[in-house]
Image (tube, rainbow, N blue to C red):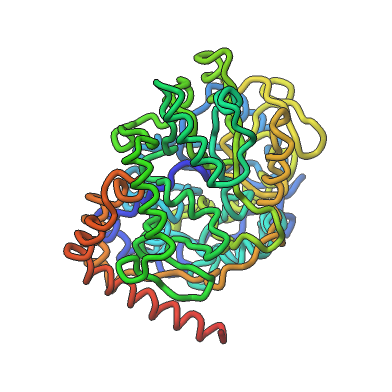
Amino acid sequence: MKRFLSTALVLLIALVALAGCTGNSEGEGKTSEPPGQTGDNNGASGDNKLEQVTLKIMIPGDRPPDMDLVIAEAEKRMKDTINVKLDVVFVPWSDLAQKTQVTLASGENIDLIFDAPWLHINQMIASGFYEPLDDLLAEYGKTVLEKRPQQMWDYNKYGGKIMAIPLGVSYMSGNSYMVRKDIREKLGVPPIQTYEDLIAFAYKVKEQEKGIIPMTAGSATYSFVAHHALNDYDTHVRPTHALGNSLMLYYKNNDGKVYNLLDDREPIGTWLANTNKWFTDGLIFKDILTTKDFHQPISAGKVAIVTNGAFGIGDSLKNTFKNNVPNGELETVTFFSPEKGANFTNFKQWNFLAVPKVSKNKERAMMFLNWANEKENYDLLSYGIEGKHWEAVGEDKMKNLDTSGYSAFGYVWLWNPVDERTVIGGDPKNDEMDALLRDADMFTTDILAGFEFDGTSVQNEISQYNTVDGQYYTALFNGVIDPEDTLKKFEAEAGPALKKIQQELQKQIDEFMAAKGK
Protein backbone atom coordinates (compact mmCIF):
# COMPACT_ATOMS: atom_id res chain seq x y z
CA MET A 1 0.00 0.00 0.00
CA LYS A 2 2.85 2.16 -0.39
CA ARG A 3 0.92 2.98 -3.48
CA PHE A 4 -2.30 3.71 -1.72
CA LEU A 5 -2.68 7.08 -0.09
CA SER A 6 -0.65 9.80 -1.64
CA THR A 7 -2.44 12.78 -0.14
CA ALA A 8 -1.15 14.30 3.12
CA LEU A 9 -3.30 13.63 6.22
CA VAL A 10 -1.44 15.97 8.48
CA LEU A 11 -4.00 17.98 10.49
CA LEU A 12 -3.32 17.39 14.16
CA ILE A 13 -6.21 17.82 16.60
CA ALA A 14 -5.70 20.01 19.65
CA LEU A 15 -6.07 17.04 21.94
CA VAL A 16 -2.89 15.52 20.60
CA ALA A 17 -0.90 18.71 20.99
CA LEU A 18 -2.04 19.08 24.60
CA ALA A 19 -1.36 15.46 25.45
CA GLY A 20 2.06 15.66 23.80
CA CYS A 21 3.09 18.29 26.33
CA THR A 22 2.75 15.73 29.10
CA GLY A 23 4.63 12.94 27.30
CA ASN A 24 7.39 11.07 29.09
CA SER A 25 10.92 12.27 28.61
CA GLU A 26 13.17 10.06 26.53
CA GLY A 27 13.67 6.65 28.06
CA GLU A 28 10.88 6.93 30.66
CA GLY A 29 8.34 4.15 30.73
CA LYS A 30 10.84 1.54 29.53
CA THR A 31 10.16 -1.69 31.32
CA SER A 32 12.83 -3.74 32.92
CA GLU A 33 14.41 -6.63 31.05
CA PRO A 34 11.89 -9.48 30.71
CA PRO A 35 12.30 -12.29 33.24
CA GLY A 36 14.60 -14.96 31.91
CA GLN A 37 15.98 -12.81 29.09
CA THR A 38 19.58 -13.89 28.56
CA GLY A 39 20.51 -12.10 25.37
CA ASP A 40 18.80 -14.56 23.02
CA ASN A 41 16.58 -12.41 20.78
CA ASN A 42 13.89 -15.06 20.73
CA GLY A 43 13.51 -15.50 24.45
CA ALA A 44 14.46 -18.40 26.64
CA SER A 45 13.49 -21.96 27.40
CA GLY A 46 13.27 -24.25 30.38
CA ASP A 47 13.41 -22.50 33.73
CA ASN A 48 13.96 -19.17 31.99
CA LYS A 49 10.67 -19.23 30.06
CA LEU A 50 9.25 -15.74 29.64
CA GLU A 51 6.00 -14.76 31.29
CA GLN A 52 3.19 -14.54 28.75
CA VAL A 53 2.22 -11.05 27.57
CA THR A 54 -0.39 -9.80 25.11
CA LEU A 55 0.74 -7.21 22.59
CA LYS A 56 -1.85 -4.76 21.34
CA ILE A 57 -1.09 -3.75 17.76
CA MET A 58 -3.01 -1.05 15.87
CA ILE A 59 -2.82 -1.14 12.06
CA PRO A 60 -4.99 0.13 9.18
CA GLY A 61 -7.26 -1.94 6.95
CA ASP A 62 -9.98 -4.54 7.28
CA ARG A 63 -9.60 -7.66 9.41
CA PRO A 64 -9.28 -10.72 7.13
CA PRO A 65 -11.83 -13.48 7.77
CA ASP A 66 -9.07 -16.00 8.58
CA MET A 67 -7.03 -13.66 10.80
CA ASP A 68 -7.81 -15.74 13.91
CA LEU A 69 -6.37 -18.87 12.23
CA VAL A 70 -3.14 -17.06 11.42
CA ILE A 71 -2.84 -15.55 14.90
CA ALA A 72 -3.44 -18.96 16.49
CA GLU A 73 -0.61 -20.46 14.44
CA ALA A 74 1.70 -17.56 15.26
CA GLU A 75 0.97 -17.83 18.98
CA LYS A 76 1.59 -21.58 18.86
CA ARG A 77 5.01 -20.97 17.31
CA MET A 78 5.88 -18.28 19.87
CA LYS A 79 4.66 -20.10 22.98
CA ASP A 80 7.95 -21.77 23.89
CA THR A 81 10.16 -18.84 22.89
CA ILE A 82 8.96 -15.26 23.30
CA ASN A 83 5.52 -16.35 24.67
CA VAL A 84 3.46 -13.58 23.08
CA LYS A 85 -0.28 -13.32 22.45
CA LEU A 86 -1.49 -10.92 19.76
CA ASP A 87 -4.38 -8.46 19.95
CA VAL A 88 -4.38 -6.95 16.45
CA VAL A 89 -6.76 -4.00 16.09
CA PHE A 90 -7.68 -2.96 12.55
CA VAL A 91 -8.71 0.65 11.88
CA PRO A 92 -10.55 1.58 8.64
CA TRP A 93 -8.36 3.71 6.38
CA SER A 94 -10.98 6.46 6.41
CA ASP A 95 -10.78 6.71 10.23
CA LEU A 96 -7.04 6.18 10.56
CA ALA A 97 -5.84 9.74 11.20
CA GLN A 98 -8.41 10.58 13.88
CA LYS A 99 -8.49 7.15 15.55
CA THR A 100 -4.72 6.86 15.97
CA GLN A 101 -4.40 10.46 17.17
CA VAL A 102 -7.11 10.04 19.80
CA THR A 103 -5.76 6.66 20.93
CA LEU A 104 -2.24 7.98 21.45
CA ALA A 105 -3.44 11.17 23.11
CA SER A 106 -5.65 9.22 25.53
CA GLY A 107 -2.71 7.21 26.85
CA GLU A 108 -4.34 3.88 25.99
CA ASN A 109 -1.79 1.06 26.19
CA ILE A 110 -0.70 0.26 22.64
CA ASP A 111 2.48 -1.71 22.02
CA LEU A 112 2.90 -1.22 18.27
CA ILE A 113 1.13 1.30 16.02
CA PHE A 114 1.18 2.18 12.33
CA ASP A 115 2.18 5.70 11.31
CA ALA A 116 3.57 7.41 8.24
CA PRO A 117 4.94 10.72 6.90
CA TRP A 118 1.69 11.20 4.97
CA LEU A 119 -0.26 10.58 8.20
CA HIS A 120 1.22 12.28 11.28
CA ILE A 121 4.44 10.58 12.30
CA ASN A 122 6.44 13.82 12.42
CA GLN A 123 3.92 15.49 14.70
CA MET A 124 3.63 12.45 16.95
CA ILE A 125 7.39 12.21 17.34
CA ALA A 126 7.65 15.93 18.05
CA SER A 127 4.95 15.58 20.72
CA GLY A 128 6.85 12.77 22.44
CA PHE A 129 4.50 9.87 21.79
CA TYR A 130 7.03 7.37 20.42
CA GLU A 131 9.95 5.53 22.01
CA PRO A 132 13.42 5.83 20.39
CA LEU A 133 14.30 2.36 19.12
CA ASP A 134 18.10 2.34 18.68
CA ASP A 135 18.80 0.52 21.96
CA LEU A 136 15.84 -1.84 21.64
CA LEU A 137 16.90 -2.81 18.12
CA ALA A 138 20.48 -3.39 19.16
CA GLU A 139 19.40 -5.63 22.05
CA TYR A 140 16.34 -7.45 20.72
CA GLY A 141 15.98 -6.64 17.02
CA LYS A 142 19.08 -7.88 15.23
CA THR A 143 17.02 -9.66 12.55
CA VAL A 144 14.89 -6.56 12.03
CA LEU A 145 18.10 -4.60 11.42
CA GLU A 146 19.60 -7.21 9.09
CA LYS A 147 16.51 -7.46 6.88
CA ARG A 148 16.76 -3.81 5.83
CA PRO A 149 19.76 -2.24 4.07
CA GLN A 150 21.77 0.38 5.90
CA GLN A 151 20.43 3.15 3.64
CA MET A 152 16.91 2.42 4.84
CA TRP A 153 18.00 2.98 8.43
CA ASP A 154 20.31 5.93 7.77
CA TYR A 155 17.73 7.98 5.88
CA ASN A 156 14.61 7.21 7.91
CA LYS A 157 15.75 8.63 11.22
CA TYR A 158 14.18 11.54 13.06
CA GLY A 159 16.54 13.85 14.92
CA GLY A 160 19.32 11.32 14.36
CA LYS A 161 17.42 8.49 16.06
CA ILE A 162 15.41 5.51 14.84
CA MET A 163 11.92 6.42 16.00
CA ALA A 164 9.96 3.79 14.04
CA ILE A 165 10.60 0.68 11.93
CA PRO A 166 10.56 1.53 8.21
CA LEU A 167 8.15 -0.70 6.28
CA GLY A 168 9.12 -0.94 2.66
CA VAL A 169 10.39 -3.20 -0.07
CA SER A 170 11.58 -0.59 -2.56
CA TYR A 171 13.06 2.90 -2.84
CA MET A 172 10.60 4.44 -5.27
CA SER A 173 7.22 3.45 -6.65
CA GLY A 174 6.78 1.75 -9.95
CA ASN A 175 4.76 3.78 -12.41
CA SER A 176 3.12 3.21 -15.76
CA TYR A 177 0.05 3.86 -17.84
CA MET A 178 -2.63 1.21 -18.24
CA VAL A 179 -3.49 1.06 -21.94
CA ARG A 180 -6.24 -0.69 -23.88
CA LYS A 181 -4.04 -2.97 -26.01
CA ASP A 182 -7.00 -4.22 -28.05
CA ILE A 183 -7.93 -0.68 -29.08
CA ARG A 184 -4.32 0.20 -29.87
CA GLU A 185 -4.02 -2.81 -32.16
CA LYS A 186 -7.43 -2.16 -33.73
CA LEU A 187 -6.28 1.36 -34.66
CA GLY A 188 -3.04 0.05 -36.13
CA VAL A 189 -0.89 1.83 -33.53
CA PRO A 190 2.46 0.07 -32.86
CA PRO A 191 3.59 -0.59 -29.26
CA ILE A 192 3.97 2.71 -27.42
CA GLN A 193 7.61 3.63 -26.75
CA THR A 194 7.57 7.33 -25.83
CA TYR A 195 5.39 9.92 -24.12
CA GLU A 196 4.74 11.46 -27.54
CA ASP A 197 3.49 8.07 -28.77
CA LEU A 198 1.11 7.90 -25.80
CA ILE A 199 -0.45 11.29 -26.52
CA ALA A 200 -0.67 10.54 -30.24
CA PHE A 201 -2.59 7.36 -29.37
CA ALA A 202 -4.96 9.39 -27.15
CA TYR A 203 -5.73 11.74 -30.04
CA LYS A 204 -6.37 8.77 -32.34
CA VAL A 205 -8.82 7.31 -29.80
CA LYS A 206 -10.58 10.68 -29.61
CA GLU A 207 -10.95 10.77 -33.39
CA GLN A 208 -11.89 7.16 -34.10
CA GLU A 209 -13.32 5.50 -30.97
CA LYS A 210 -16.54 7.25 -30.08
CA GLY A 211 -17.74 6.45 -26.57
CA ILE A 212 -14.22 5.74 -25.29
CA ILE A 213 -12.56 8.30 -23.00
CA PRO A 214 -8.98 8.75 -24.23
CA MET A 215 -7.31 9.47 -20.84
CA THR A 216 -7.97 9.75 -17.14
CA ALA A 217 -5.90 9.76 -13.95
CA GLY A 218 -5.72 7.01 -11.34
CA SER A 219 -6.92 9.60 -8.80
CA ALA A 220 -7.72 13.30 -8.88
CA THR A 221 -4.98 14.20 -6.43
CA TYR A 222 -2.35 12.09 -8.22
CA SER A 223 -2.36 14.35 -11.24
CA PHE A 224 -1.29 13.99 -14.86
CA VAL A 225 1.50 16.51 -14.33
CA ALA A 226 2.79 14.72 -11.21
CA HIS A 227 2.75 11.39 -13.05
CA HIS A 228 4.70 12.89 -15.94
CA ALA A 229 7.27 14.25 -13.47
CA LEU A 230 8.04 10.73 -12.24
CA ASN A 231 9.96 10.07 -15.43
CA ASP A 232 11.54 13.48 -15.83
CA TYR A 233 15.12 12.38 -16.42
CA ASP A 234 16.20 15.79 -17.72
CA THR A 235 15.65 17.85 -14.57
CA HIS A 236 14.42 15.33 -11.94
CA VAL A 237 11.58 17.54 -10.68
CA ARG A 238 10.11 16.34 -7.40
CA PRO A 239 7.98 17.72 -4.52
CA THR A 240 9.60 19.33 -1.48
CA HIS A 241 9.53 18.39 2.19
CA ALA A 242 7.30 21.35 3.03
CA LEU A 243 4.08 20.89 1.05
CA GLY A 244 3.51 17.18 0.61
CA ASN A 245 2.87 16.29 -3.03
CA SER A 246 2.37 19.87 -4.17
CA LEU A 247 4.68 21.05 -6.95
CA MET A 248 4.06 24.73 -6.29
CA LEU A 249 7.39 24.44 -4.51
CA TYR A 250 9.72 21.88 -6.04
CA TYR A 251 13.27 20.55 -6.28
CA LYS A 252 15.12 19.87 -9.50
CA ASN A 253 18.62 18.97 -10.71
CA ASN A 254 19.45 17.47 -7.28
CA ASP A 255 21.09 20.79 -6.42
CA GLY A 256 19.67 21.45 -2.95
CA LYS A 257 17.68 24.48 -4.12
CA VAL A 258 13.99 25.17 -3.56
CA TYR A 259 12.14 26.44 -6.63
CA ASN A 260 8.87 28.35 -6.57
CA LEU A 261 6.51 27.75 -9.50
CA LEU A 262 5.36 31.36 -9.32
CA ASP A 263 8.96 32.45 -10.10
CA ASP A 264 10.49 29.49 -11.95
CA ARG A 265 8.02 28.03 -14.45
CA GLU A 266 10.05 25.45 -16.34
CA PRO A 267 9.67 22.61 -16.95
CA ILE A 268 6.41 22.44 -14.97
CA GLY A 269 4.87 25.39 -16.82
CA THR A 270 5.15 23.51 -20.12
CA TRP A 271 3.59 20.39 -18.60
CA LEU A 272 0.69 22.46 -17.23
CA ALA A 273 0.06 24.10 -20.60
CA ASN A 274 0.15 20.76 -22.43
CA THR A 275 -2.20 19.12 -19.94
CA ASN A 276 -4.66 22.01 -20.20
CA LYS A 277 -4.59 21.67 -24.00
CA TRP A 278 -5.35 17.95 -23.75
CA PHE A 279 -8.31 18.66 -21.47
CA THR A 280 -9.56 21.40 -23.79
CA ASP A 281 -9.17 19.05 -26.76
CA GLY A 282 -11.29 16.43 -25.03
CA LEU A 283 -8.56 13.88 -24.30
CA ILE A 284 -8.89 13.97 -20.50
CA PHE A 285 -12.04 12.69 -18.80
CA LYS A 286 -14.30 15.70 -18.25
CA ASP A 287 -15.48 14.37 -14.85
CA ILE A 288 -12.00 13.71 -13.50
CA LEU A 289 -12.52 16.00 -10.49
CA THR A 290 -15.76 14.38 -9.34
CA THR A 291 -15.03 10.70 -9.96
CA LYS A 292 -14.79 8.76 -6.70
CA ASP A 293 -13.86 5.29 -8.01
CA PHE A 294 -10.99 6.01 -10.35
CA HIS A 295 -10.56 2.39 -11.43
CA GLN A 296 -14.20 2.13 -12.50
CA PRO A 297 -13.80 3.75 -15.96
CA ILE A 298 -10.92 1.45 -16.95
CA SER A 299 -12.42 -1.69 -15.40
CA ALA A 300 -15.69 -0.93 -17.20
CA GLY A 301 -13.86 -0.60 -20.50
CA LYS A 302 -14.72 3.08 -20.94
CA VAL A 303 -11.22 4.59 -21.10
CA ALA A 304 -8.10 3.89 -23.16
CA ILE A 305 -5.30 5.27 -20.93
CA VAL A 306 -5.09 5.52 -17.13
CA THR A 307 -2.16 6.56 -14.92
CA ASN A 308 -0.99 3.69 -12.73
CA GLY A 309 1.16 3.67 -9.58
CA ALA A 310 2.82 0.34 -10.40
CA PHE A 311 4.46 -1.44 -13.30
CA GLY A 312 1.77 -4.09 -13.47
CA ILE A 313 -2.00 -4.42 -13.06
CA GLY A 314 -3.58 -6.04 -10.01
CA ASP A 315 -5.49 -9.29 -10.39
CA SER A 316 -8.72 -7.77 -9.04
CA LEU A 317 -8.81 -5.03 -11.67
CA LYS A 318 -7.81 -7.49 -14.40
CA ASN A 319 -10.63 -9.84 -13.46
CA THR A 320 -13.24 -7.09 -13.25
CA PHE A 321 -12.14 -5.72 -16.62
CA LYS A 322 -12.29 -9.18 -18.22
CA ASN A 323 -15.81 -9.73 -16.87
CA ASN A 324 -16.95 -6.38 -18.29
CA VAL A 325 -15.01 -6.52 -21.57
CA PRO A 326 -14.52 -10.21 -22.46
CA ASN A 327 -12.71 -9.41 -25.71
CA GLY A 328 -10.67 -6.52 -24.30
CA GLU A 329 -7.03 -6.59 -23.26
CA LEU A 330 -4.95 -4.34 -21.02
CA GLU A 331 -1.23 -3.66 -21.08
CA THR A 332 1.07 -1.31 -19.22
CA VAL A 333 3.43 1.23 -20.72
CA THR A 334 6.20 2.78 -18.63
CA PHE A 335 8.89 5.35 -19.32
CA PHE A 336 10.91 4.34 -16.26
CA SER A 337 14.64 4.07 -16.96
CA PRO A 338 16.26 0.88 -15.62
CA GLU A 339 19.79 2.26 -15.98
CA LYS A 340 21.89 2.24 -12.83
CA GLY A 341 21.93 5.68 -11.23
CA ALA A 342 19.23 7.10 -13.51
CA ASN A 343 16.68 7.39 -10.69
CA PHE A 344 17.11 9.45 -7.56
CA THR A 345 15.91 8.35 -4.15
CA ASN A 346 16.08 9.68 -0.61
CA PHE A 347 15.36 6.14 0.68
CA LYS A 348 12.36 7.50 2.58
CA GLN A 349 9.67 4.93 3.23
CA TRP A 350 5.94 5.56 3.12
CA ASN A 351 4.91 3.42 6.09
CA PHE A 352 6.30 2.84 9.60
CA LEU A 353 5.60 0.88 12.77
CA ALA A 354 6.25 2.69 16.05
CA VAL A 355 6.43 1.69 19.71
CA PRO A 356 4.39 4.16 21.79
CA LYS A 357 5.98 5.46 24.97
CA VAL A 358 2.94 4.21 26.94
CA SER A 359 3.67 0.58 26.01
CA LYS A 360 4.37 -1.63 29.02
CA ASN A 361 5.93 -4.29 26.78
CA LYS A 362 8.53 -2.46 24.71
CA GLU A 363 11.16 -5.20 24.84
CA ARG A 364 8.66 -7.93 24.03
CA ALA A 365 7.24 -5.85 21.17
CA MET A 366 10.71 -5.68 19.64
CA MET A 367 11.25 -9.39 20.27
CA PHE A 368 7.98 -10.08 18.43
CA LEU A 369 9.09 -7.96 15.45
CA ASN A 370 12.39 -9.81 15.42
CA TRP A 371 10.51 -13.11 15.36
CA ALA A 372 8.16 -11.81 12.65
CA ASN A 373 11.11 -10.86 10.43
CA GLU A 374 12.33 -14.46 10.27
CA LYS A 375 11.46 -15.94 6.88
CA GLU A 376 8.92 -18.60 7.84
CA ASN A 377 7.16 -16.30 10.31
CA TYR A 378 7.16 -13.43 7.83
CA ASP A 379 5.49 -15.77 5.33
CA LEU A 380 2.83 -16.72 7.88
CA LEU A 381 1.89 -13.19 8.93
CA SER A 382 2.19 -11.75 5.42
CA TYR A 383 0.38 -14.39 3.37
CA GLY A 384 -1.46 -16.69 5.77
CA ILE A 385 -1.42 -20.47 6.19
CA GLU A 386 0.79 -22.14 3.60
CA GLY A 387 -1.23 -24.68 1.63
CA LYS A 388 -4.51 -22.94 2.45
CA HIS A 389 -4.01 -19.30 1.49
CA TRP A 390 -0.84 -19.54 -0.61
CA GLU A 391 1.94 -21.84 -1.72
CA ALA A 392 5.64 -21.13 -2.12
CA VAL A 393 7.30 -21.06 -5.53
CA GLY A 394 11.00 -21.12 -4.76
CA GLU A 395 12.48 -18.81 -2.16
CA ASP A 396 11.04 -15.51 -3.33
CA LYS A 397 7.82 -16.20 -5.26
CA MET A 398 4.37 -17.46 -4.40
CA LYS A 399 1.01 -18.50 -5.80
CA ASN A 400 -2.21 -17.23 -4.22
CA LEU A 401 -4.73 -19.91 -3.30
CA ASP A 402 -7.40 -18.12 -1.22
CA THR A 403 -7.06 -14.34 -0.96
CA SER A 404 -10.68 -14.06 0.22
CA GLY A 405 -9.64 -15.62 3.52
CA TYR A 406 -6.34 -13.80 3.98
CA SER A 407 -5.05 -11.16 1.59
CA ALA A 408 -1.52 -9.79 1.95
CA PHE A 409 -1.23 -6.64 4.08
CA GLY A 410 2.39 -6.83 5.20
CA TYR A 411 2.91 -3.23 4.15
CA VAL A 412 1.23 -2.01 7.36
CA TRP A 413 3.29 -3.98 9.91
CA LEU A 414 6.00 -6.21 8.43
CA TRP A 415 7.39 -5.26 5.04
CA ASN A 416 11.08 -5.83 4.44
CA PRO A 417 12.86 -6.08 1.07
CA VAL A 418 14.53 -9.44 1.82
CA ASP A 419 11.57 -11.67 2.61
CA GLU A 420 8.79 -10.19 0.48
CA ARG A 421 7.61 -12.60 -2.22
CA THR A 422 6.28 -11.75 -5.67
CA VAL A 423 3.19 -13.42 -7.09
CA ILE A 424 3.82 -15.64 -10.11
CA GLY A 425 1.96 -15.06 -13.34
CA GLY A 426 2.88 -11.42 -13.86
CA ASP A 427 4.76 -9.90 -16.76
CA PRO A 428 8.43 -10.99 -16.41
CA LYS A 429 9.56 -7.55 -17.55
CA ASN A 430 7.53 -5.88 -14.80
CA ASP A 431 8.96 -8.33 -12.27
CA GLU A 432 12.47 -7.38 -13.37
CA MET A 433 11.75 -3.68 -12.90
CA ASP A 434 10.15 -4.30 -9.50
CA ALA A 435 13.34 -6.12 -8.53
CA LEU A 436 15.36 -3.05 -9.54
CA LEU A 437 13.27 -0.89 -7.20
CA ARG A 438 14.35 -3.15 -4.31
CA ASP A 439 18.07 -2.77 -5.05
CA ALA A 440 19.37 0.19 -3.07
CA ASP A 441 22.57 0.27 -5.10
CA MET A 442 20.68 0.96 -8.36
CA PHE A 443 19.83 4.51 -7.27
CA THR A 444 21.59 7.85 -7.06
CA THR A 445 21.23 9.15 -3.52
CA ASP A 446 19.24 12.36 -3.28
CA ILE A 447 21.44 15.18 -2.00
CA LEU A 448 18.76 15.85 0.63
CA ALA A 449 18.52 12.26 1.86
CA GLY A 450 18.13 12.38 5.63
CA PHE A 451 16.81 15.96 5.69
CA GLU A 452 13.69 16.71 7.74
CA PHE A 453 11.74 19.97 7.55
CA ASP A 454 10.46 21.66 10.70
CA GLY A 455 7.47 23.74 9.65
CA THR A 456 6.68 25.16 13.09
CA SER A 457 7.76 28.72 12.30
CA VAL A 458 5.67 28.85 9.10
CA GLN A 459 2.65 26.86 10.23
CA ASN A 460 0.28 29.79 9.64
CA GLU A 461 1.63 30.23 6.11
CA ILE A 462 1.30 26.51 5.41
CA SER A 463 -2.32 26.60 6.57
CA GLN A 464 -2.96 29.67 4.40
CA TYR A 465 -1.35 27.99 1.40
CA ASN A 466 -3.30 24.75 1.94
CA THR A 467 -6.59 26.66 1.80
CA VAL A 468 -5.71 28.07 -1.62
CA ASP A 469 -4.26 24.75 -2.75
CA GLY A 470 -7.58 23.07 -1.97
CA GLN A 471 -9.38 25.47 -4.31
CA TYR A 472 -7.15 25.25 -7.37
CA TYR A 473 -4.33 22.71 -7.28
CA THR A 474 -6.01 19.47 -8.37
CA ALA A 475 -7.89 21.15 -11.21
CA LEU A 476 -4.76 23.00 -12.35
CA PHE A 477 -2.49 19.93 -12.41
CA ASN A 478 -5.06 17.82 -14.25
CA GLY A 479 -5.51 20.43 -16.98
CA VAL A 480 -9.07 21.40 -16.07
CA ILE A 481 -8.40 25.13 -15.66
CA ASP A 482 -6.18 27.64 -17.46
CA PRO A 483 -2.67 27.65 -15.94
CA GLU A 484 -1.86 31.33 -16.50
CA ASP A 485 -5.07 32.59 -14.91
CA THR A 486 -4.80 30.12 -12.04
CA LEU A 487 -1.17 30.93 -11.23
CA LYS A 488 -2.17 34.58 -11.02
CA LYS A 489 -4.79 33.60 -8.44
CA PHE A 490 -2.17 31.61 -6.52
CA GLU A 491 0.08 34.67 -6.55
CA ALA A 492 -2.66 36.99 -5.33
CA GLU A 493 -4.04 34.67 -2.64
CA ALA A 494 -1.00 32.71 -1.45
CA GLY A 495 2.08 34.23 -3.05
CA PRO A 496 3.58 35.82 0.11
CA ALA A 497 2.82 32.71 2.17
CA LEU A 498 4.43 30.46 -0.43
CA LYS A 499 7.51 32.69 -0.58
CA LYS A 500 7.94 32.59 3.19
CA ILE A 501 7.64 28.79 3.23
CA GLN A 502 10.21 28.61 0.43
CA GLN A 503 12.64 30.84 2.32
CA GLU A 504 12.31 28.88 5.57
CA LEU A 505 12.74 25.56 3.75
CA GLN A 506 15.81 26.85 1.91
CA LYS A 507 17.29 28.14 5.17
CA GLN A 508 16.94 24.72 6.81
CA ILE A 509 18.33 22.96 3.75
CA ASP A 510 21.36 25.27 3.72
CA GLU A 511 21.98 24.45 7.39
CA PHE A 512 21.62 20.73 6.66
CA MET A 513 24.05 20.95 3.74
CA ALA A 514 26.54 22.95 5.79
CA ALA A 515 26.44 20.34 8.54
CA LYS A 516 27.17 17.67 5.93
CA GLY A 517 30.08 19.72 4.64
CA LYS A 518 28.50 20.17 1.21
